[in-house]
Length: 268
Image (cartoon, rainbow, N blue to C red):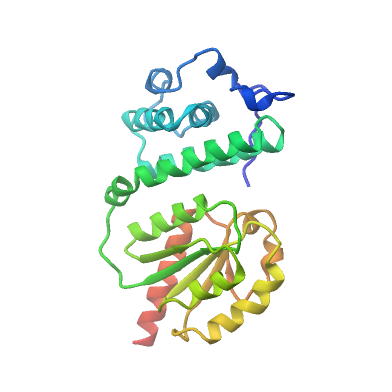
């Protein structure tokens, strides 16, 4: 997982009464919308840098409209939504988590900012899917979080890339193991992906996934696992009767799609 050094950056203050404070830029009334973003000079269409990511994080703390304005500013500078998703929103979510882990944000502020970040994905969904549309490939996919997961933004983003590649996608955020099983057995799927963020249900998944595959309507169901655990401790996911993927969304989609289409050709 990428790590960012924010010790010398403009970041939320820590200490007593944190809930009643905003990041320095916001407390001083510094703009976080297109005026500030537009002041950054890009050499052509360069990658979004750490300063830009901090601006988005601060905007998410200020409000959803401010966050939207940052994205609009990036688009005016020539960034595609795919660039914004991978180089802006994804590292911004990590940065918010780092600020929380370092006690620079409390839980409430982190939750609000993360919710605004995820809402951006919903707001720009139609535009993203039209950015590089492809014909339907006839493949269906189930994407699930682990039972009781607190975060689903990464899974939703992955679903958007699969949809844009022509898949029919069902996304589920089960609250417990019973709902996880019900969603897994709710329809016929070509593939299923599970995002694992913690080790709370690893033992359960080791037992459950082989059973669910054996009882699936599709006896050739492909199952893969990813998410934060695949990035920080992929060895913990071994033995889950599933392929472990620790790649970005476009690469994951490419690998799974190619594998499924190759299998279909071999079977024909």
